[in-house]
Image (cartoon, rainbow over all chains, first blue to last red; front, side, top):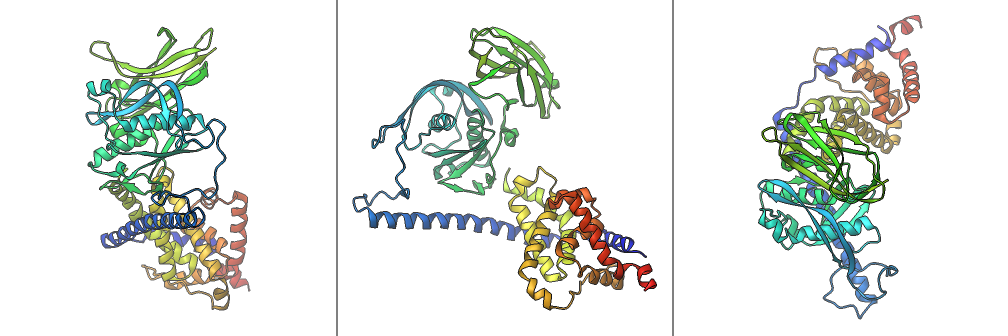
Length: 343
Length: 166
């Protein structure tokens, strides 16, 4: 027998190995769960020590620091941003714009586009316009549905009292830090819906594909009694079981683009037929087409279609994706995204 | 995804892959106890990173994790190993080919850890050179020369013709 044959015989031995027993699996999974808790505990202990050391240092060096202020102080005083008045902690204005606020209707996500302007607190403000927008709209999300939204039955699964502690951007991932109230109460569906509300609201902004949720500044493995895994950044597709029947991923709120535009997403619609149209500032349809998702009538499929359009000048417009009822031709499952169309 | 869903998804992976990972680890390290521990560590790493890994093909990834763990374990024990006699691989052969298995095992101990990994992935795991290159994130040509050099080293021990002609 030569070397290769002799080594190949090893493969036969590999195939003869039997599967692990149930007891081996149970012992493994117990160890794995323990490893997760240890990881979380170590991360929390690390922060606790940092806060402790930070507070000690601050108290020793700055005697005029109020003792009841237990928040960790930054190691160095940051330069005041030119957009803010130095030394004065004041809110930062956000001009009125339109965006999607994702709430819950029945047991599904539901969106309402709302036009709002207002202010964000100085400690959450950012020089990155996308982060600034995200802060503003996530705060609006945490405040709950407007009375108009409530009238049509929209509720929020985010517990009242949840505070937005910070938003940071790392490439196409938005890190959203929320207070511990976010984890409180609710069954597994409510936990899933509240996380999905944040993911969907956060991923509507240009350049953002995924959102990671942090609780009180900590990366956590899972939240809620049944442990919804939030260790990795999450995307819209991770919530298909609570998603509306058409979800657009490629076109972002108030995105500015010239012809052509590629519209991609996923849908679970009758015969997989997805209609896509572009509307100008006056609501006139500039272009309408339809495409077929990779699956339909009871299963989720992907769709992607590129549409060319013509506009003479830069203007507000909308990209809409919808289906027409097979019974009476009425519009259904409409997704309507405000955009800016450029020639 | 809830933890219970991850657990049930991971269970399928575990049931299918744990035995061959364990055996691979034993052959990589030449030590049953250490190999089993390293295979367990690799599986734990797979479990904690599952939401990231699951969408790709997790099997080659698991092998990369395991080979890396074995290589760093080897680095730590380099001195010890140098002084120790060639490790005797305790491969339990279900069909009684103990002698044959021990012969292969002893032969593998002359290889460097990466050569041993490449040989085992090629012949024990039956992976192609391209798959090994992907799994170990090692250039294809490097994998080819790893394999060639390893076989050159093994030939005097394992090839009957070579031995007879000596």
